[in-house]
Amino acid sequence: MGIGDDAVEVRAHGWRTLAALHAAIEAALGQALEDEAGLSVVEYTVLDALSRQDGWHMRMQQLSRAAALSPSATTRLVNRLEERALLQRILCADDRRGIYTELTTAGERLLERARPVHDRTLEAALDEAEQTPELAALARSLHELTRPLHA
Image 1 (cartoon, rainbow, N blue to C red):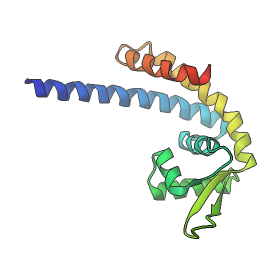
Image 2 (image 1 turned 60 degrees about the horizontal axis):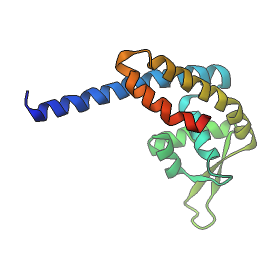
Image 3 (image 1 turned 90 degrees about the vertical axis):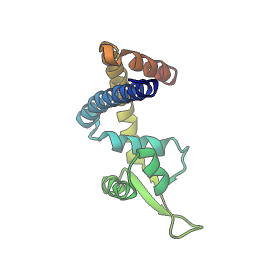
Image 4 (image 1 turned 30 degrees about the vertical axis):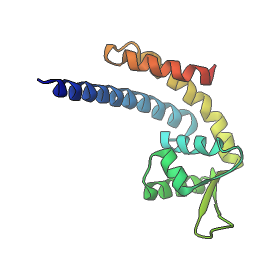
């Protein structure tokens, strides 16, 4: 194996490690959020992204990027959240083709209930991943990044 081959294998190993850690965290978050708040991980992500707009709203395209979804998947998700009265769509006054989304009061209340579940579960998932030798270094790094946010 040449030097180039070694670099490719190192990157591939790093990617597999990241994917394994992501899957473990997402599974833990998905179960906890569903059980305790009736939300999927992506629904939580959307509500959280909207809440960080300081009372403002987001265009569907921005929301799509924040949730890492295709435009059509974002539309379906927004439809479901709107049916549950957790967010609402608003036509852009300057561009009638533009649609904004923003949290409703019910969405804010559910997010307030879900956020501690999310944070506690993320902390526990990172703690658990630190016990797995293949994931330990990456989990520790992520743990350190998230601690100042939740301290």
